Length: 70
Image 1 (cartoon, one colour):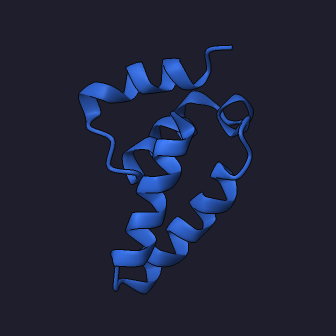
Image 2: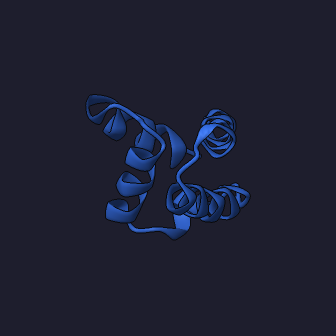
């Protein structure tokens, strides 16, 4: 699951021409490099990160649950 998020992030970085958006997604890339990043963030931050990665609102809860399953 996190691999798919990394792919989405890389796609956004490569396609965007907005420098502010690019900087934000480069920071997200650094966060996603840690496979346990969703265990280290609170739920609000995790949801915000998923929204930045264009996850549809109705899927965020399910995806977050999958990311924090062990």
